[in-house]
Length: 376
Image (tube, rainbow, N blue to C red; front, top):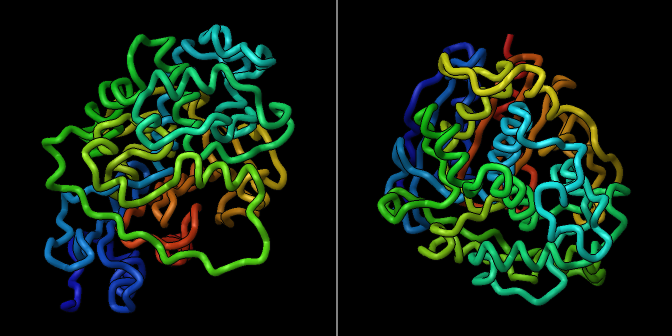
C-alpha cells in the first residue's frame, strides 16, 4: 500500500497532533482514520487520510463516514440530556412513568438515571436473540421491558453494550413520539450540519468505510464471566454486520451510529461550551453539567474494570486518565473515541476503520490528544 499523505487543517500550535496522526499510518496502526478537535467551539484540528477499505482501493475522503459502535452512545446521551433540560425527562423518575410496561419483573423502581449509567441490571437480553432481532425495535424493547434484572439496579454498573440504546431510546420515544434517531437528526445533527446518523439512509452507503475486524483475542484458560459472555454472544457481535444495509438502516442507538471525527467533535462542542454551538443554543449550561454528576463507581460487572459513570458518559478516573477533572468520554469497540473537556472547553474526536481490541480508546487517539493537552 502506498505511503499515506494526510489531509486537512491543523493549527500550528498543535503540529504534534498532525505528526502523530501521520505516524499512525506510517506504522500501519491505521488504515483509514479521521481526527478532529475543537476549542471554544472552533475547529483547531481536522485531519483525515488513508483508505476506506482494507485493499486500499478507496481513499478515505473528507466526507467518509464509518460505524463508530459505542461512540454512538454519547449521541444518545446528549439527546436525553437535551430533553431533560427541557423538562421532558426526569432522570430521578422511575422509567415506568414514561414506559409503563417496563415495571414488570420487579423493575418498578428502576430510574432513568440507572439506564444512563449502565446500572439498571439489563446489560443484555435473557432470551436468545439474533442480530435480526436487534433490528426490530419493538421486539428488542419489549423483551427488555419484560425481563428481570441480572443484578439489583442501582448497586453496580454493568456495561449495557447494546441494550442502553433501546432503553434510553424508548424513553425518548415515549416522551416525544419520535424515534431517538429522528429526534437526534432533527434537533441536533441537522441544525449543526453535522454528518452523524443513527439510522443511515441508503443514499449515503457509498461514503461508508469498511470496518476491519480486530485480531482475535489470545487464548485464555479463564472463562469469560457470564454477563460478559452474554454481551458478546447474544447476539454475536460481528463487525462484518456493519457492512450490511440492514445494520446501517436500523436505529441502534448504542452501537449503530455512522459519522467521522469532525461530526463527533462538533456535536459534542454543545456540551463543552455550555449548551451552545455554532451560534445556536441547544440547552442550558446547567443541563450540560448534569452529565458530570457521578452516578455509580466501582468495578464494572461486565468490563471487569474500575469505572465511574455520570449521566451517559464515563467520568474522570482509572478507566481513562484525562488531564482535567471536569472531563468525560466514551469510546466504541475497536477504537473510536470522544473526550469532552469542560474545563478547557475542548472536544477531541477520533474515528477509524482498522479496529483495535479495546472498547474505550487506545494509543492511536490518546497519543494525539495528550500532545494537544500538553501543548504550551
